[in-house]
Length: 220
Image (cartoon, rainbow, N blue to C red):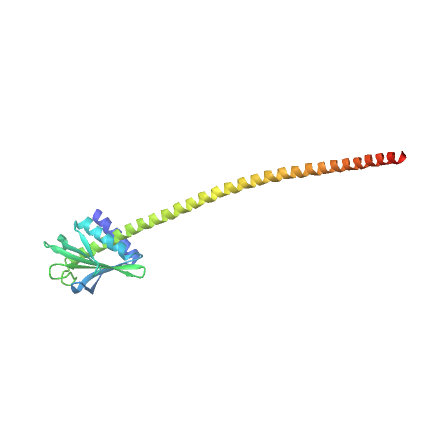
C-alpha cells in the first residue's frame, strides 16, 4: 500500500511538471554512452548536484565525488540489487544548467555495458524509479529552501513594519510636543497682546502726567 501511494504521488508530481525520464546517447568521460535523462524545472545545477551526492549516500550508502574536470558526479561500486543483479554498478551523473532548469543525466555502468531499455528491459524500470524518486527529493528540498526564503522575506517585512510603527509613534509624539509648543506660544501671544495693551495705556497715562507737569511748569 505504501509503495502504491509513493508511486501515485511520484506520478502526480511528474505529470504536474510534465517531467519524464528518457534515454539519450551523450558524451561523458568514458565516451558516448547511453544515459537516462530528465529535466528538473526551476533549479540550480550546484543545488541538484549536491542533492544527488546526498541522495546516493542516503539510499545506497555510497560516497559520491565530483570530478571538477569532467563535471561528473561519480559513485563507485554501488550496490543496486535491482539494477546490478548481483554485481555492483558504477554511476555517473551530470547536472547541466539550461536557462532556469537543470538537465540531469545519469549513466549506469553495469560492468562494461551501460544500462539501456532495449538491452536491459527488466532493470530499466528500476533506474527510472530511482530518478523519479530523486526528482521528488529535489522538489521537496527545493520547496523547503523556497519556504525558508519566503519566511526570511516575511521576517524582514515584519521587522520593517515594526520600524514603521516605531517611527509612527515617534512622529505622533513629535506632533504632541509641537502642539504643546504651539499652545504655549498662543498663550504667550495672548499674554503679550494684553501686556502690550496695558503698557500702551501706561504710556498714554505717562504722557498725560508729563503734559500736566509741563503746564504746571509754564504757570510758574
